[in-house]
Image 1 (cartoon, rainbow, N blue to C red):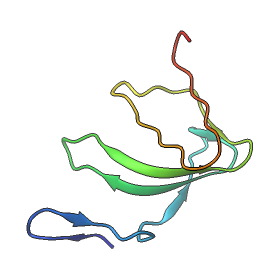
Image 2 (image 1 turned 45 degrees about the horizontal axis):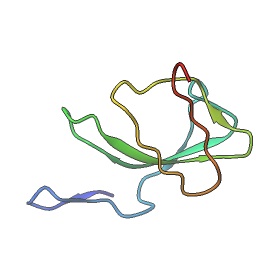
Image 3 (image 1 turned 120 degrees about the horizontal axis):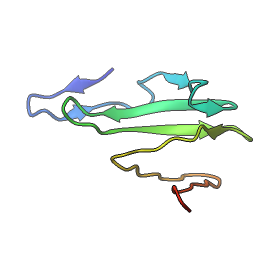
Image 4 (image 1 turned 60 degrees about the vertical axis):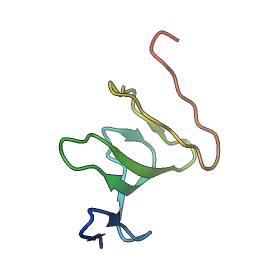
Length: 83
């Protein structure tokens, strides 16, 4: 459950948001998505911990406004268009 103080500070306790299975159109294999935060409109920011089981991967896609990846375990591979 998310709580909001009068000063617009939001506190979201760890584990308070449900895990969801990664959508089949976005992933191959078993992927779990744990949402961490999402900005209010007009903000376009959000964060999640995405857990990939062995052999799982994302479908080819792009992020026109950029993306920051923080690998907390294992190895991640990325590719940039043209490279």
